[in-house]
Image 1 (cartoon, rainbow, N blue to C red):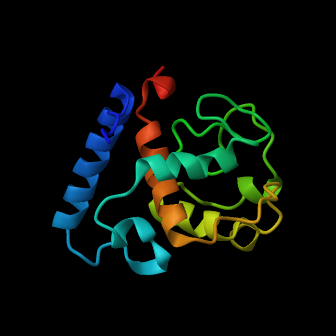
Image 2: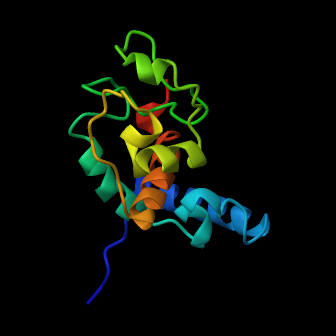
Length: 149
């Protein structure tokens, strides 16, 4: 049986993920392995799996626009509670978090434990592989055409 080729956007995303994974592997095998960071413990994140996990998030979020939850374009490096015009909880505004792989992993594991009082009532993503692939997908999606101004 012949395998179908991924659409062009997937080829670009997969290539970028491989480059990130190879760069991370060169930085040292133990880098980022603390705090349950699944993305650092596996050689290559599965972006297709991460996109499937993101389907759960789409009940409230979208990449390029706000819904019940804020947009995810521009997520990495952004301070929590800072999307202009979005009505965040006081807890999220005061959290002091800046979104990166580590803070996302901690938040996605147990949102209410990391930010008590957050309006995000989702129970979290308990599986480390799911979180790691989701975080890798969000990073790559952030540079997708959908997220470019």
